[in-house]
Length: 453
Ligand code: NDP
Image (cartoon, rainbow, N blue to C red; front, side, top):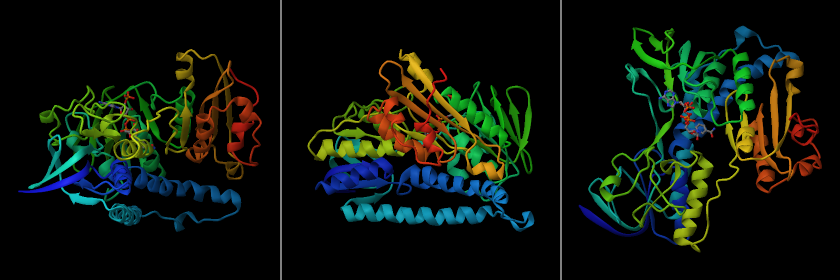
């Protein structure tokens, strides 16, 4: 056993937050190591945002081909085919390229990458294999991992991790859950021609999103032929030769070729030795930290999915930058979790920033609500029966726009710009005095004149 003395910082986990913290700290002159047991880039790059978005693009191609006819393109039906292994292989090539870039970024910043599984021996020592590494600061940035409910037959269930490497697509799939990952994968599978059933335990999926957004998304997903079943859950699964029998809580039985659970993610803290060190976890299993990411052991900090803040890549990256500044910069910097924009890449996309109508009413605002529900211009010639929803939640007294919500093509792209305005405290009058870009869908956000409520 050897002792490698003298790191200023050891980061455990080379995901989005950990890598940003490591790089920025090294650039400030700190001696930094990052320990990684799996892949550089973490969930986002390997089994999350990036491959998911590539699959979403792939899944949308069929609709683009269908729409082409209205624009005069003749695409013979029997001349079009889709090859899933090609999509997976091309995606893998791109992910490997990104893994390489992450490695280069760390190397050029002077960060030492240690491959292996880390545990924290004491307040200033990390153990990887038979090596001991000492550091002034240790940061846990180990992320999260999918959770599968404990039901009979759970071993038959896949999670998003495996979906990215599926050898072949089934004819029918069941997606279990009603959050981001479930609706995104239901859209991917359905777009790629898999008959898809989504099962959600509550009245309406996408809990926490604006009610109009949830209903509108339901309507549009149903139009695309996705079988949405609410108030139902899976009780057990039986594996038969070439299929699974899924027994539901309402007595129904589904025969399917694949069951995917997207029923949430837990903090990945296994084997770190946190309990032995006295580092506190909360009831949901996340590491408890103060506003400056400090755990109950002062030299140990934590950030990203593992601390239970919004499980979003830009949040982890922002946390990495704040923590680096606090540890090795001027000691200043705070996270601001208000008005975090987010997108769900279901079909059509959801983009949202700020308060939902329900949150704003609960917070005591008297509101003006503006809504526009229209068929995007692109679909007029193609005849596609898909609509777009835009909604503004405005404080009636101050005229401040509290929230902007959209369901429709490129919602994430559009809401990102509006997020700047909302963060800056823009009023509805300022939205109204902004020129639209014509003809776009986005211009609706600055031309909604009359409140609907
Ligand atoms: P979410 O927490 O968003 O959703 C979990 C879903 O599973 C909910 O609908 C929940 O129901 C349901 N559920 C939980 N436990 C059970 C159970 N025991 N039985 C049946 N249903 C259950 O988790 P996801 O896995 O979808 O995603 C994790 C996080 O990753 C997201 O919250 C998001 O922060 C991030 N993410 C972001 C993306 C993006 O930015 N586009 C894409 C993908 C993920 P209920 O609502 O009733 O609790």
